Length: 178
Image (cartoon, rainbow, N blue to C red; front, side, top):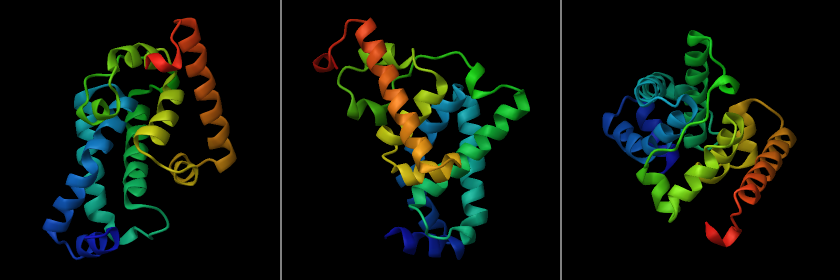
């Protein structure tokens, strides 16, 4: 089934279509939330809320973006609400070590080295790079999720990559090492 078929069936409360959507998108959604919240239990809780919202609000999907972009947007909004409940912002959270994630491990042969680099990035830089590289979203999709102009997304990606390069240089790591 393509995205249009899946969402139409979910609007009609077709549980099989919802299950298929969940299977296609839940791993990336969970790891995105884990990266933001840094707490597996909170990530799981917000994920349940996210897919509950997807089930209830499927009729609101306009098709202006990919379905996965819409879901990540819902997940991000719910994660931000979680931050506001605990009066913690993304900027005050200490960096964490990325856990062994099967979805990410597929992309990374040398994850231990990359973890050391990633843990040194700010939460905002981690988020923007996650959306670009792991969620494989376009700048336009990211702009919709973060509610910022596309040029701001480009700027944030540029500075996140620059920071990544700085960290690699500081650690004496060459591009070919990772």
